[in-house]
Length: 206
Image (cartoon, rainbow, N blue to C red; front, side, top):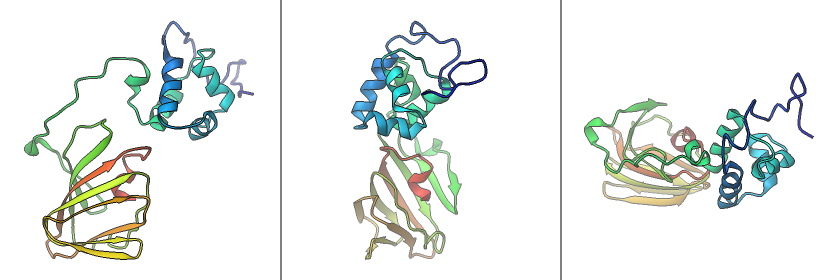
């Protein structure tokens, strides 16, 4: 049974929305859930809904609130406009190096090397020496990295690999892994990750 908000309205329903406001939404929600390989129960658990309520959303017997739509967007790893049936904006195909704004977290520097909102994330990463060396990362997806400059120690489970410029590695990121710069000036990487269900903030920071 759905929780009731004051006044008797379901707390999981969008106020004032009807099927005419969001035509075809239920069918798109079901299609995206099936594409994600999730059962009704698994998808509902990810966003804090009951399976019965999610079923009503998929059959257009209920309309979701914005927080629920955002949760479904994250759970199915698709932009919100795809769920709403809006035509996606033209995807960016070229990323200019001079225009790639750097961001920093944990002492590492990240620059985008691909378009946002795609099925994989591409980054240029600078890893300083002796920063985050002991951090063990485990998260869904696959990683591919290529050493541009410097020397990198990659630890996968108990395997230890020393990578030189021109070397690359491709692995399941559910394997516990650590990255450490061996060069005094740090190491520069080209980094690709399949997003799957990972929040973007977890891709590099663990």
